[in-house]
Image 1 (spheres, helix red, strand yellow):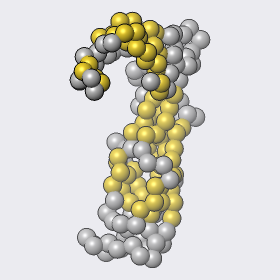
Image 2 (image 1 turned 90 degrees about the vertical axis):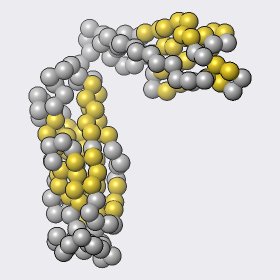
Image 3 (image 1 turned 180 degrees about the vertical axis):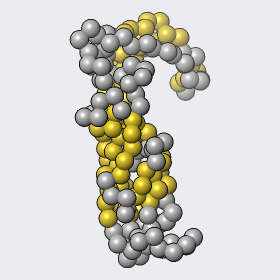
Image 4 (image 1 turned 120 degrees about the vertical axis):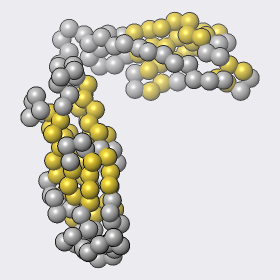
Length: 159
């Protein structure tokens, strides 16, 4: 099994080796990890905590992305979508400011909650998270809404 730097190999029935190799971190290997199994496979999840230590020359912010649907376009209203920023950085350097490049399409509050605007005209906006400690660092995605068939059952058309 292999996923994003995680390697799992079976040593013998019920015992595994788990290795993690990720950019900007020291490699970690856990041997003889016990997994309860039967003839169909694992019986229950095996909980592991693996602490990664950055290498000495690692940048302060190692990864910064917005998690949520990309290039999402909706035709119903109201529509809400929660976005989350993943910031791989030390505590105190993870806060972000959310913004929408086109509030006529959708707005986003400072918790990452997007609200679409009911509009008969289609459009797109860029939802952006900006690091408070380094405003030059941004992560974003696109969101679209509207069109001639847009129905606003709970009220009048916003635009």
